[in-house]
Amino acid sequence: MIIIFSVYRFLYSIHNFTSLYNYFPLRNVYFQNHQIFFSFLFLYDKIKVRVTQCQNALTFISYFMKGAASMQRFEQLEAFLRQRKPSEMKYLETGELSKSYIEMKYTVQDGKKLFIFDGYIPQNEEFTIRRHNRFSPVPEHIHNFIEISYVYNGQFTQIIDGREVTLKKGELCLIDTNVPHSIAVTGEDDIIINILITKEYFRNELLLNSFSKGIITDFILEVISETANHRQYIIFKNKEFSQIHSLVCEILIEIFFPSIGSREAVSHYLNIFFIKLVRDFDYETNG
Image (tube, rainbow, N blue to C red; front, side, top):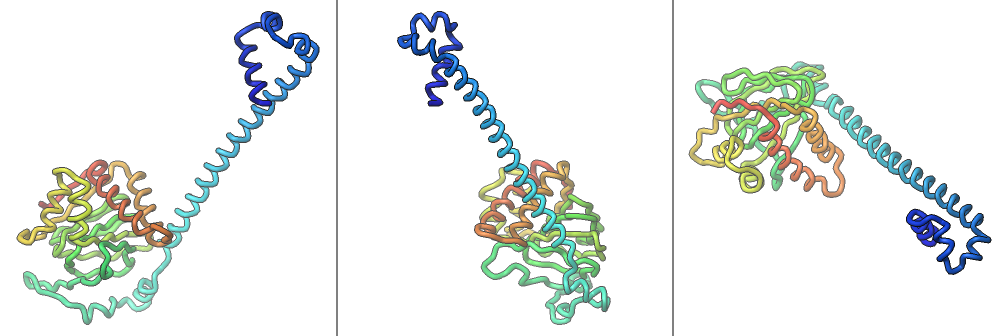
């Protein structure tokens, strides 16, 4: 029925109804029933308008619901990141560093004791992502993985190879293996995200798949080199905070509230993350 009405409307738009009447095979029937026909056309137009309005309303509702769900996820993440960990509450109560430092391996360089952070990335995993413990300082240490410290909120200060570096919200630092560094006390609102990555992941995923010649590639080549001194780091200052922050939030949601395919999603997000480091950040390096 709708097709017939559409054909009639098409003919009506091309010819006037006087000409159409003269050539219409069933003109007598049509003439006698033209009022009914126009009534159906009018009704069809009204229905079509209403259907379009309903479709637009449903589209709006769908976008609204998706936006509301997304906002709820971000609010849930924010609340989770601001919760105090048991280790944080213990330090606030006692003022003592973790007892794990007592048994932790260490080395001595230039007369300074450097703890060796090992085993932070789970076995058979290529990366791990965690929130930095607030309130307590972190003694000078080294590790055999790559560390990315992203300032989700607030700020924090590191001493990296003897240099004081303060990062603010939206900024991050990429630290090579075996670079001595320590972290000063952070406050309640200082939320730092640590992304720890193996050298193998850098080589297999980032160097081979993501970049042409540039600072990240040079950094990675140093990282995987057996002869390099591994004393380099890069400080990135974001020019487009909202985009990279949204990407970090998506990564954290997949990590802290995992579902099917979360690990694979994070791996892809990290590739995009490093591409954006090159495209959207200013940087400074000690190299």
